[in-house]
Image 1 (cartoon, one colour):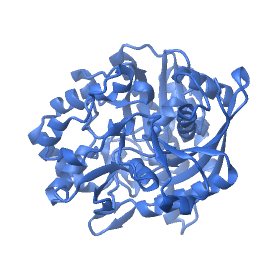
Image 2: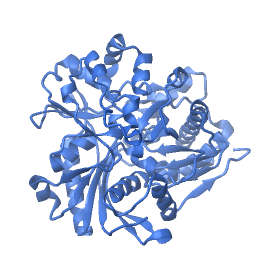
Image 3: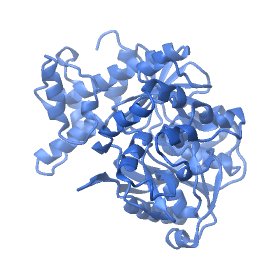
Length: 493
C-alpha cells in the first residue's frame, strides 16, 4: 500500500475560500494512515464590475503561492503539488496573457446564450453527446457569450481555473479530464478514456465548430495523476526552495472528493456537500437515456475513468447566503452558525414548510431569505417567522432534494443503494445528516469533512509512488484514517 516517504500539498479552491493543505502518509500496510495539516486559508470573493461578476484570479494565485511557501516550510521534503477547484469557469489567453478577468459562473451573461446554443444544437442532442445535466452556466454557454462578444476571435488558449494556476506554476497548458468533462465539449466516451485505454479520446471538436468555438483554443487533455512539471523560476521565487513536482489531480473538486468516499464495496450513493450538493452514484459508463436527461442527471468524469452520475442540488449556498444577508442586517455582526443550528434542531418538523431547493431562482447571489419567502408565498406555503425556522426549512428542503436525487440515481443507473455517504463540509452538520437519513430512509455515513483535500493528496501520493493501489485501496486508507459518524433513519422526525 505504501511506497517511499514524502509530503504533498493540496491547493483546494472553493467558491468562497481557498486553502493549502499538507498531506502525508505514515506507516505501512494495515497501519498506514494519511494525515492532513492545513497551513494556509484565504478568502475567495468575486467582484462585480460594469460588465459582470468576476473571480479575483490573480489574488487567488498570489494566495495559493503564499500558501505553498508555508507548505514548503512545514514540509521540507515536499514532493508534489496538486490543484483542485470548482468546475466550468475558465480563462482565455493570447500569447500566454489573460485577455480578461475570468467570469464567475453565477454571472447572468449566459441567459441569452442558452437559446442561441439550443438553436444550433438541440438540448437532447447535446445530452447524447456530452451527458451533462442542463445548467445555464456550463462552460459551452459561457463560451457562446464570449463568442457573441467577439472575444473568442482573439484567444489562442482556454484554461480551466485549476489548469490556469498550474500553468502559472509550471508553464504547462493542459486540461485535466475530470474538469474538462464539465465543459460540455467533451464527449461521454472521452470522459472514461483512462479506463478504456483509448488514446484517441479527445474534445468533441465537431460540436465546438457547430457552436462557433474555435477548436484551436482547446488544450491537450491529461488524466489525473499526470506529472505536469517542476516549478518555473518565477513560481519558485514565491514558493521557495523545493523540488516538488506539480501533479494533475482530479482537478474538479468533486472528482477529488469522490476519491475519498469511504466505501470499498458497491451499493453506495454519495453527497458531496458544500456550496453545492453533488448527489449521485459511481458508474463504469455514462447513462445518457432521455429519462436521465429529463430528470436532470449529469455524467462527469471521475478519477481512474469512473463516471460520476449525479444531480446538482443547490447545497449549503442557501444557508451561507442567508447568513451573509443576516450579517448585513445586523451591521456586520455575523450570526453564530452553531447557535442557529442548535435552535433549528428544536423547531418542530410539522411547522416547517419546505421549498424546492433545485429552483434556479436561488442560483444568483443576493437576499436569500427574501427569495425563499417569495417562493413559499407564491406556492401558498407559510413563511418561517424566525431565523431558526428558516434554517430548519433550508436543511429539510436540501435533505428532501438530496433524497429524491439518491433514489433517482439508483433507479436510472440500475445500481441499488444501501447506504449514503455524505462527505465535505456538510458532513459536520449533524442536523442535515439526520434529516437526510430520515428523508432517504437509509443509513447515512458522515465524513470525512476534508474529502476534497484527501482525494487531492491521495492521487498525488499514488502518482509519486508514496502509496500504491487502485481506487478502492485509496478508499480503504481513507476509512482507516477518518472518524466517521452513522445516522440511522428515524420513524418520526
